[in-house]
Image (cartoon, rainbow, N blue to C red):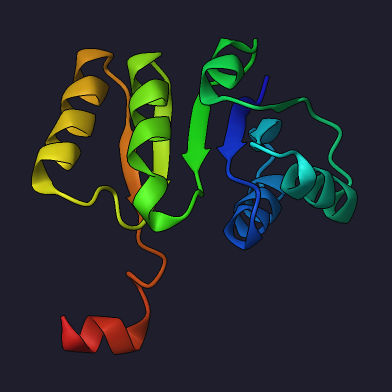
Length: 135
């Protein structure tokens, strides 16, 4: 059975994650979280997804088959969905930045460790040769 992913926030970045997950046989998008639903409907139509859409992260993490939560909300809105997901014992992938303060990041790390789950910040330019040359 594939690892089930819920994507929180259904804007442009969510599409990249959904497309990447579609290429991995061991992964499947099993839920979307969208406050208004419009972004989720567009994403479903564009990618041919037929998965439930939830209004809250709390509903999504309670859905059977959700193993990982991918947070693709606007950058200032990463903390709340990541805290809910980690607190529910889910693996969490967060678009950059992981958090806006060190204290917030520490809170997420503590929750992930408490539940023995992975917490990952998506740093998409990590292997870009130009970024590597500067670093």
